[in-house]
Structures are given as C-alpha cells and as structure tokens.
Amino acid sequence: MPETVAASYPDLKGQTVLVTGGGSGIGEALVKAFAAQGSKVGFIDIDDASSLKVVDAVKAEGGLVHYEHADLRDVAALKGAVEAIRAAFGPITVLINNAAHDERHAIEDVTSEYFDDRIAVNLKHQFFAAQAVLPDMKANGGGSIVCFNSFSWMIAMGGMPIYTASKSAVLGLVRSLARDYGKHNIRVNSLAPGWIMTQRQLDLWLNPEADKMRAERQCLERRLYPDDIARVALFLASSQSGAITSQSIVADGGWV
Image 1: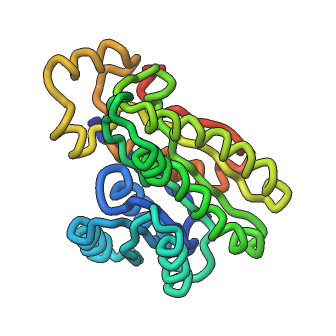
Image 2 (image 1 turned 120 degrees about the horizontal axis):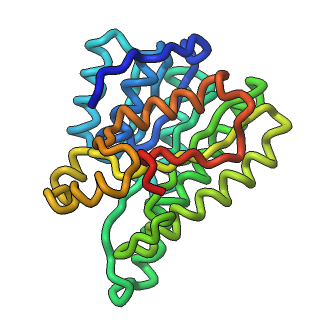
C-alpha cells in the first residue's frame, strides 16, 4: 500500500467513539485510527485474545481505549457493553457499526434459525447499537453514526444470500435514522467497503486467480487494506463531512 500522510481531525479529539467488532480486520484499523486522532475509543468484540492485543497496541501509542466482550447477537449484552463504555469514557458521540460476518451459505442449506442468526450478526445489532447511543447524541447536540454495508450485494455476489440481503438492508436503516434524527444534528451514513485485504480474506479467499480478477474489475489495480476504510470512516465521523447524511459511500477501488 502506498505511504500516505494521515489527515488530522481536531474535532474528534476527546470524543467518545464506539466501534463494534473492533478486535481484528477493519475494526482493528478503525480503533487505532480514532485513537490516533485523540478520541476515547470503546470497542466491542467477542474475541478476547485478539481484542486484548489491540488494547495493548493502542495503549503503547498513548491512546485511550476500552474493550468490552459481548456477543452482539445478544441485545442485552450489547446494551450492557455500551453502558460500560459510557461509564468509562462518557457520552458516546460517534458510533461505527462495523461488526459483521460474511460466512458463505448455500440457499438449499438455510434454515429459519440460520436465517435469523445471519440477520442478527449483520443487521440487527446495528439498529440496537444506534438506539443505545442516540440519547447521548441528542443531549450533545449532534453526533455521527456510520453503518457498514458491503459492495457484495451491489455486484450481485452469490454464495451468501442472507449476508448480502442484510447488508443491502443497512441502507434502509441509515436513511430512516438520518431522517428521524437529522433535526437533532445527528448524521447517519453508510460505508460500503469493497474487497479489503484483512487477514481473514488473505487466509480464506485470496489466490492468484482471484487477485487477478480483483485487479481487472477495480479501477485501481492495487489491493485495498483496512486503513483505506478507516480513513473514510474518520472523515464521515468528523465535522468535515458535516453536510453529508443519509448517504452511502462506496470504497471499493472503483469496482462498482
């Protein structure tokens, strides 16, 4: 990835930022990027080992970070984790709804229980995380919510229909929240990453044939990495994007 000069967003300094799924991949990059801006970053994840490494890395750089273990499918556990982060760092004014799991599944194998589980993993928690922090943002006089969807449904990607359905549904959620809370100066946007080279993607899906296809379909031939997405999220969270709400930003190197 080419070297870049990190942008500075002074208004993010001191804000309490909540990142879901912050223990690895794009989420890890998000936690580190906001901490580098001087934000107080709370994050929720289910993988203690990976998450504690992120905590150590952020603290080693002088950042403020707080980790809460929770299964986001459990709404009560999610709300408890949000409350613990609020108690540690104060009212939450930025929410980054990042957590997801792109598990492949064949249409013929999907049961009602599995369908509900995939919706819970990829969509439901985004609503309840927003619900939990909106009072903080109203009291603050504004805030920013960034809900992650995916370019997978835009390119008609097969092999995981409940994942792509839930990710496309994020746009409806975003537009509704943006309309209802815009009067409180709360902005709500969607961020759709393309094929981002997290360690999971490198381990499971990247091979020479797939990488050649990626380079051909993107306008930018280079691989995209978690930091590419974190930079977009910083912009959407900051006041520099103050006129942007109810939008979906696609960061996929020009694939769509």
